[in-house]
Image (cartoon, rainbow, N blue to C red; front, top):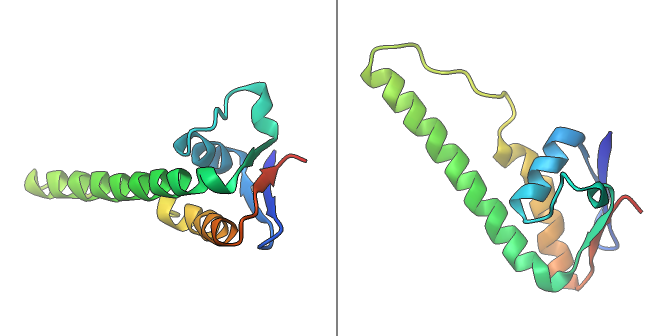
Length: 111
């Protein structure tokens, strides 16, 4: 399954189900519920969604850096992470949210 996020301000942002689900969970949408197949983010909810995504990206990068530092301290090989980071996956969605907030348009999916 794909998540296809749409708005009047930008082109569509398409994510594979695991990535879309993770982004929705980060911004406080219940991606496990049956209603997660469709939804809306209103412009007034976008600042909180943007802040949550930015905080999750910082936390993800910090935990990776800590894991690398810990492995180095133990003289062990560095751990392997997903090739595409949360930052890279979430960036198009963040840009969509920022532009939609600025122009006052909602983001929808599954409709």
